[in-house]
Each structure stands twice: as structure tokens, then as C-alpha cells.
Amino acid sequence: MARNIEGKIQNLKTSIEKYIKDKLVVIEDLKINFEGVPFSPNDYSEWIQENITIDDREFIRGADTGGVNANENEVFVTFYIYVAKEKTKKANRHYEIRDIVADYFSVGDTISLYDFSGNNFSTVIQTLKIREVIRDTSLLDERKFFIYVYEVNLDWLEKF
Image 1 (cartoon, rainbow, N blue to C red):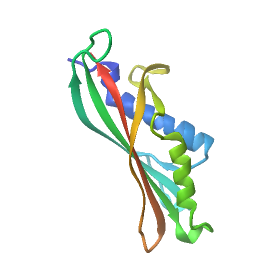
Image 2: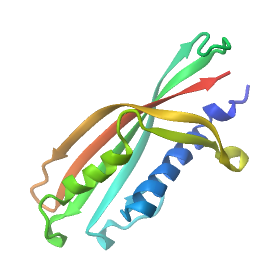
Image 3: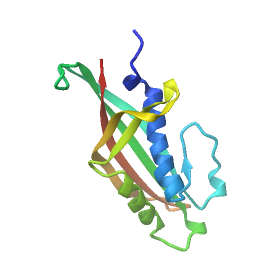
Image 4: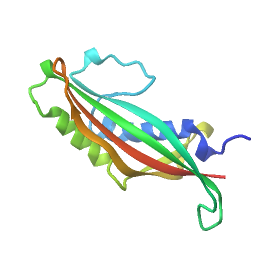
């Protein structure tokens, strides 16, 4: 049986990456290293490495008022923020970038899910909701970078 449009991972990944691009690249002018896209970190003094992980599908009988069955799916979006020590004049720049990311990825925020598999780039088929901040911490790197990790958990229902 073919997956419905809500269950297609292509739609999920592309919708999240569209949101990241619209908010962090277009509005905030940050550099993003999107998974699977060529990127040369040597060209930048700061950038964000995004990672999208799909985990735990839980079957829910009668998930909405219409008695529709669904899988509740969890998605983790992780942002690894890198600031090259030798190319910055601010020792707190990774914290500033973290705050920008957190402004768009906070508990309760929503991300529209589009049907990219059907070339429908404008109709919202569902909404993903940020449920929890999983990691929010700086990492030590004695050598070249200030590093910060910010990770959120989203979920959505795949109705069938």
C-alpha cells in the first residue's frame, strides 16, 4: 500500500528545510549546511549544520473526532552551530545564533507540511508542532570553534 501524502518522508524533510530556509537563511541571513547539499565550511566564519531524524511511530486508534486512525510520528531537528574562533571578534556569537534559532524553534511553534511529492508547494496539508527542546547546550572545542547544539522534538499525525 502506498503511503499517503502525510506519511511521505520527502514531504516532511522538505517542509522542515523550507521553514529553516525561509526563517534562518532568507530572514536572518545565516549560512546553513543542509544535509546532502554540497557545502564548504572553510568559506564561512559561522554556519549551522542541520540534521533531521525521524523516530518512534506510535499507532493511535481514533486519533481525531472523525475516528480516523493514525501514526503519531516524532521528528528531531538538531542544529549544530559553529563559529570559527579565528574569524570572529565575539566570544559569544554562538549564543547569539542560538537565540536566533530558538526564536523560530520554540515549544508550541508550528511548521507547515506541504505536498512536495505532488508538486503542491502552496497548500498546507498538515501542521508539525514543536513539543519539546531536547538539547540546549554549548560544547567544548579547545581548538578551532565555538560550538552550540540546539535540538527540538516535533510531532505530526499521519492519518489513514
